[in-house]
Amino acid sequence: MQAQPTPNIPVSEFYWTLLHKADKKFSKIRELPYYHRNRHEYDAYFYKVFKVYTQLWKFQQENRQKLVEAGLRRSEIGEIASRIAQLYLGQYMRTSEASYLSEAYIFYEAILSREYFKEGMFQDLGLASKQLRFISRFLMVCLLLNRREMVQQLLNQLRVLVDECKRTFQETDFKEWKLVIQEIVRFLKADTAFMNIRPLRYSLVLDCHPDSLPHVSTSVAKRSLRLRDAILSSYHHNEVKFSELTLDTFRMLQCLEWEPSGSFYQSSGAKNGQNGAPASGRINYSQDIADPTLPPNPRKAVLYRPSVTHFLAVLATVCEELPPDGVILIYLSASGAGMYSDATSPSTLAYPSDRLNPSRGQSKGDGSSFQAGCLQFGTHGNGGMNSIYPSDLVPFTRRPLFLVIDSDNREAFEAINGVQRGETPAMLLSSSSSYHIASIGSSRQSSGSLFTIFLTAPLQAFCLLIGISGSDIDMDTYNKAEKLLSGSFSDWGSTLVTSDTIDPVWAQILSDPFLRRLLLRFLFCRAALSLYAPTFNKKEFIPKCIPCLPASVLPTTAACQTVILQIANVFGATGKFIFSEGLELPENRQGDSESMSS
Image 1 (cartoon, helix red, strand yellow):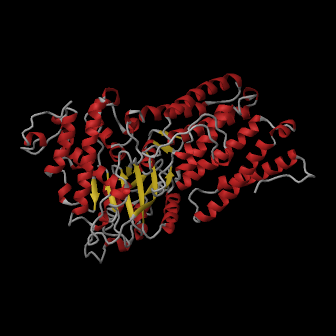
Image 2 (cartoon, helix red, strand yellow):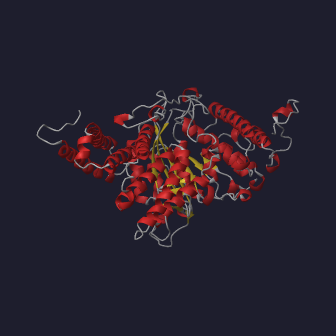
Image 3 (cartoon, helix red, strand yellow):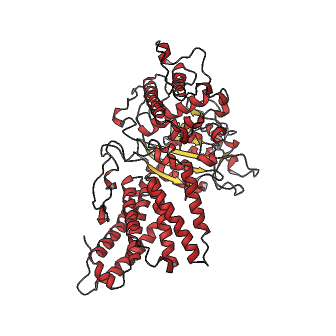
């Protein structure tokens, strides 16, 4: 219902009362954690806060002249719009519903185009700080929406503004904002156009529609699980990041969402966004979010340098709310660490009952592997408060888990298999040694994890492996390879679905489009690294999956090797791989001498 002042209350007094009410509610919701135990309680409070700001926004629009005469400044209007955008962004981070992200973009775009904070900015340090924070938040939204032209525009504005502020407010130190600029420049240098040739998100133009995915026989898969929640966390020394979003978690976050500009992409003329958001001659971003026939995005919790207590609290909350047909993806990317010398450290706290799993009759997880190390999500020497151990995850194996461990200490997490508390987790484990691509100077510090790139942008990862960077890629050649890889994924998916030997742990997740895609990309990664000459027959460079997948998709099979041979041949790089003797291109076997090489 539209808020209106009573006849006895002046418009300005009613406005300031409504503003005070909104500010109090905004402060309270900002202090609430994104990963609240009762999501319905959080949602209810969010809508209360949002309702007040909607009333406030409409009221100032309808009574603008009277409020301006009473002293309302343009910057105060901008502050309301900025807070509405923050509410939308926060709700996106909680729910992963892309419509909230697009609405945040609409409000931030309005603030930018109408220059709400410009007037008097260089006479008021507080106003200048609001403009800097607004641009920084808008940058994050544009990154998440992959609107790179706007990112570059905002970056240029941020540079100019920081330089101007340094000259104007000479007594103030702006080193922090210089670091923000350095962060985003480094981020964009790593996340290039080459890395985004095709969307990292699930696109119906390029990927199979969920309804068309083949189903596993019910005799193999007793149930069909869906990815409902994901916890994403990455920490490496000097890793590429912007704010609290690292390059690796940024790529994984996108990989677990639907691409808004797929076959249902729409654009339109000037329209209003939700709740009266201003717009002028722009695309209606709220219309290009999702095909209504598709399920919602899985919820994602992105944790930056989490303490183990915070990580476990979030994981416990997600497990508690997981629906019966749900599976949780946990992505952990961090360097490994060995045992602490302290006898009471977490590394010695493997559960006594884990030493033998009676149901399996073998000491597969005898505790020694649990003590082999952990993943370090912060600085050393803090008593393990930022260290995640395999044993930390064991209690949560009462629910279906899909673990992606990207670490040099992946062996420690293999021990989880055999000591689970009811559900055998599906695990994709990186190689224990990272291959340094010296030819293009690629390293984790400069471009992120190669394993994660294979899972999120597989053909780009293959190109990096063979020494092709974005600057020297031929798009006709790339598209030919992309078509081959897409067909291979379809074939591998059919092989897994029809296999009589596939483990039920994998069979029950093959109908989920996101998890299926990750699994098929893992097969490609494993095959490429297994056959790549510098890493050939070197187990430390080969990723691993637990439980084992059928032998029909092993890198040693002719089918897998042919895929790598075909794609390598497209790029003229067959000499960089070692194949089984007698393996030939399908065209050659059919007597067709035409080369696929560009």
